[in-house]
Length: 438
Image (cartoon, rainbow, N blue to C red; front, side, top):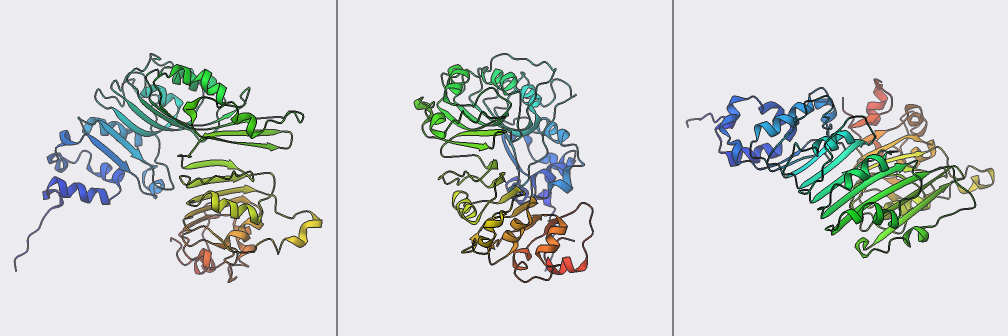
């Protein structure tokens, strides 16, 4: 029987594209740019490009010039109308940063839709300074929002119909940089806004959104938002309730709205207002005050509270967030820490708490009680846990120097153990974590 050697790039374009979809898209681009063999694929026919990075990007691309890849994409695919660079389920792809680059870097006269991560709000302003003239939809996740001295073209944006801005880190410059940008979007039809405001004069409520944003967008028909505002210190005689905040949302455009107001003694208050159903994937600084709402879209959650989390809280947590993949806990206060309550400790857990989709767990800043709670399989079931972040000394105690049976099952599938930087784990750790990557 004769044998034929078929080179990958001898395959029809349709089959080649199917193969490329199975690989990490970003790595494929790195390998194919400047490859003359790739030139036989007609770049002119590609008008829509969606790139998805895998979860191991940290080791693979942090040493690469990600800006160069972003710029090369627009140069390489001449007829690109739609570009999306999406993160993996856990990690975010390194952001675009236009700082100190020529004014027309990353420009196109035909791109209409862009979904991308950027380093800071300056990059957002740069993308909207005229270099993407036909842009109608811009979906951004921004690492930082702060005011700088750089000047950008601030003309109105009549072509922009859809805008989404997500920033998980708090900002003190909402009034000075975010609001002026939104007021340039008079033709906007859809707005998605996730923002965390610190040091503002008041809580963000319905009247503020009406007077400062919506009045400038007469064509808007869809407004999805999650807005947290932090204040401190707090006047103990003035207590604003959830109902007080909700009563300000009288505009029919809001449809369903929910609110969470958390008071932390007299030094801080956090107010969150959000549209329902919640469509964002990540929430942060969530405490004991979980509303009676099911957050089906939320897969990444960071918990923080000055008061302890008890068994009843974790039951409500799994009911409110049934599809959690990434959970981080920051709480140094154990339940029943008062001497008169200590007899309740062993009776607090009455059934196993299940997290069927949890992949990553960060309990580095949690009291050892919570490490015991999550790793003990008589209290918690973690069938998919593959990444654990924890202090090594606490891990030694909870696992009884990696010999305890009750904590072995939840450790069995862990591939990444992040306990100390640059630490080489001894043999008993690898025996206890048989799936650990070498």
